[in-house]
Length: 148
Image (tube, rainbow, N blue to C red; front, side, top):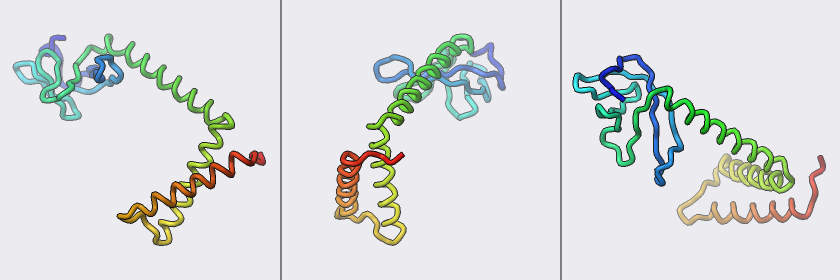
């Protein structure tokens, strides 16, 4: 990508690599300014060299054209929808409903204790009571079927 051909206000793709060098994140950003040497500054403040590599990052992101980034964005969106569908399917299952009921009940019990002045202390007593509440609720939901 030749950054000297870009102008402030143009949209550009930003591609991120994960630790195994497979891209898992991409987004579209707006160019704020371009230096005479071709360094690009995006509206989010990140700066890129004239060859499109992020400046000062341990695992840098890269500038790509919109044509090149669009299929990646679509793939990421498809994967996210698939994960959400799997999560919803799990939550609709009896096991998922039990787990969600346990989590919500424990959260509500701890919130009620916190509301009336029992906060987690440095000795970790709130963690202990949270674990005990969780075990009691898990036992209950495993022994009883839901009414609806």
